[in-house]
Image (tube, rainbow, N blue to C red; front, side, top):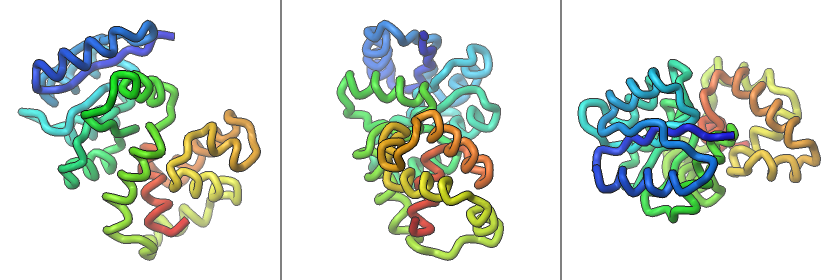
Length: 217
């Protein structure tokens, strides 16, 4: 299956490098290129790609706002490019529903792998990136804090298995790793993830991971 990607990056040289890397993969097609957030949203609406590779700092419309629009309209999954030196932007992108985060200094193979991972519906790119994200932007804010009544009620509605899966997401585990940990089929894990996201009214696995951390799962 060909993965269609829109690359949104305002620096032309960087964007060209990302496009070159992605096009070297036989199963990835660069469907469009955007130099700012507004163009990224427009192309997502027109082209309906599988993944939007989104920089957080862009003119006209920043990557966080663009991510929020793309996710809210169900246009594509968003893979955010970050340097981890802009806490506010990255955490905002997570809350906006970004499916994954990738460091800008990632190797070519890691970039290709991340796009494939997000396209498969695996919001957690790699344990290293995910755990660092959670530790950096969730834990210092409110570890073990009491959940709002609405969230508490939603968590209480989860089955035992769904709570176990949520705990695994909080550790940054992929579907395959969760399947091994809980001794179940990977397809079953995907079903549990989908159901718990719906019950908790969350947009992505990363949001579920942060919630698991905040609630002490």
